[in-house]
Image (cartoon, rainbow, N blue to C red; front, side):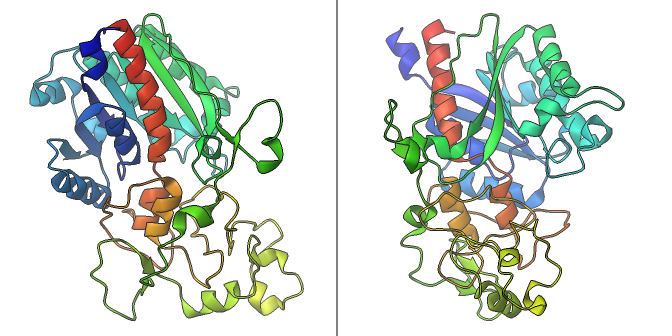
Length: 377
């Protein structure tokens, strides 16, 4: 391998950037992110705040990606076709999520998946990295068969000269304290020599066999130290803290979660009166869920906020960031809502839940960079 190639930083462009979780990992892997394209105004405020803090030259474009011409973007960045090393992003996933209505390409958000193809066709990056929910693997077109959307995406990648590889990765298998499973596609021009990394962590009962895995990381290990100073209480005391360690729990929710033991959820507490469990069914395993210190978190979601393992409150956005693997000096901007729900722009909890864990992105980015370096591309 060329020594200069191994050491040089490479050029990347980020689509559907969100709060920048994937971008953090890609930068740490040795790429300069030249542009971040995102529609949500609060996510853009987050991206700009961190670019300013880091004195980064990254350009943040707040725009509907469908309104951006890739050729104009290249001119703006003073790049030629084929100069970008990596194009990466995680298009909105609600259309393919197993937890949603699975409207696929009949939902306009589903069609955004193919914006990755449109940009790649013009920019001609050396490699492409896509993150999606695993439901994409079985999503179908209207009246079609399961898996047809993903097959169409792969076919279009191949049609513009890329060879894709894909795998569903569980974040906890790589040291992130979260049972988050997502599909990752890595495509390279021509022959694709990329190899996905093997897992490094496993449940403790699997750590004593032939393969010497490290045990899964529990959330108690990563949120330790955030208890002091205690989080500010939303709506009761003014907060100007930039660390996003803010408690947004309503009084009634404190009363309900107080009756739930560590690692369990309210609907399972059948000995409690109906007044406390009102509106919950036995299937509501993630509502009023109190996490366990010694276990990874459930997948952080946009629909609920999980509860602290020992305190009667929601986890704060900063604690969510620790569970996701964000660095402590990373800033979140935008509202901190006491209730999740339908809203045009994303609050801080949902900015984190929508993003790729930075350590997972770094691991994949390092492998992509190594591949490009070895090819001296």
